[in-house]
Image (tube, rainbow, N blue to C red; front, top):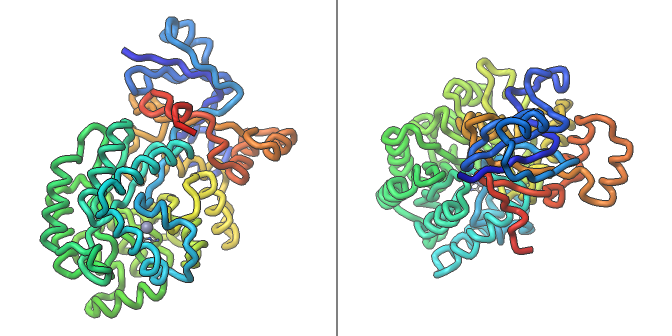
Length: 438
Ligand code: GUN
Ligand code: ZN
């Protein structure tokens, strides 16, 4: 039995704090808190003194005071093969894909390349405090093997899948409708539920799949209804026009996915920027999740995610937040929350810091239907947590002199923080960041 008792200021969410700090039931904050971890799971959370006197009596203590302990961040949309695409100087989505992304992704057929990038990828996630991600691999089976092998070795809870694409890309990146289906099935059998790994059915997006491939993707979704489906939707106006050309029978882009049975509560739809009212209704009624990728949307110039509009629908559209590396420009969920705040703010949508941290933890866990498993410091949940240091740079230390409340501290970390703000990361109860080679 491995046990640890972490000491520090604890923050975790039970629900979305819609009214910010006027939603006290939505979160727990403990000034001198204890988090008891046993065999990779959270055993108890409470006042440190009480835990130390009781269940945590003989347990090794790691004292993180005065830092803040929270659940690990969750990134709901990221492309691990794009680590060498980040910061490519392209104008817009289609140019960015053709000129940089599709070129780089072809390298995943090279011996040793997927393994090298997968290892660097998990180092980077840990460095930034991200303990779970929903990731795209490439079209190559080897990219998925390398990803899950490395995630499993590190015992990290990951969601990923082989990208399926059988048209409108270089031949080195194409599968066929049948091989995409067969390879996905084989990978599902091997990896879904192995350790902490979860498989996601991953048709890249409508422009790179034939109707036959989307048909078979839908068949996979019906055959494995508990699997996630991840794809892209309405990121860019040229992309939408292309989909209209390719699927002339369809009312809109969303209806393509709907037609092939790809919408549902486990479906993650990257971007969702340029949606009609009919599309919003279809997404909302299916329970699919719109994934907000702020740094990517700004970098590729795709547009502004309109959260208020999605939330105003009945039922509201479920949503999540993500980095979208390598369209996105930072691995950090703090940087992502900051850019997300700015995108909403410029549209007159104020977003409270408590809602931001809820979203990066429990909110994203709910969007992935993984609440109770990750995303909160609750007994029985997996012990993925992070330690945040609001004084991690000289400028932050100085600014902290004028900070008086928890909310101000959170907002400061969101606005100025990055990987340096993440003092430690625990994966299934084991320290991970302090063990990284620097
Ligand atoms: N649409 C299809 N593929 C991609 C991708 O790799 N990144 C982004 N941002 N959009 C996409
Ligand atoms: Zn993407």
